[in-house]
Image (cartoon, rainbow, N blue to C red):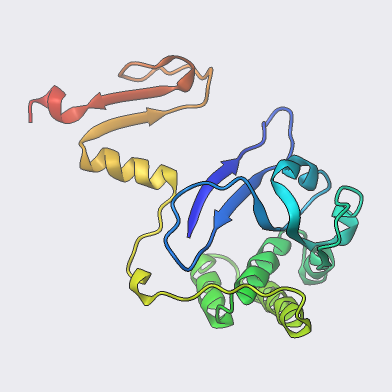
Length: 216
């Protein structure tokens, strides 16, 4: 699995976010400018990524959200908003969508449930229970899609990757800095910095090799 792209909306102007994840039977480590499956969560999401939508792209989600923006015939109506509302609120549509995707990849439902219980272990039991229920509904939706033959994803499992570490860019940067004994400060553009070290213009980067500065 490789996640090469994540766009982040402006906190001032607002807008849509998009995260691209590649999954393959073989190792992938590069970006592709297309989407095979798209899950839009809001109006305008399809427009936001329309340059990556092709004639074979499959859309999964509330059809009322993408019907006006998507002229194709590969849309599958998944009532995420209704599922979330019945469980407790819009936020649970995220868990339902994750479960839907895992179900299409034929991942066992227990795998996600164990993750959810661990992830929300410090929360109220009600939150845990509602997320588990959202996951159950998402898996049910995937089972119906597979049963009707509307979508099939063939990705072979490879047990050799079981012990590999999945990192995002921030984690890799932190680990690399730690191993290289480099101190790194990263700030948003145009944010003033009053600490020690040099601020590198609009990028907001401050890098100092602690090993060299300290002589060892």
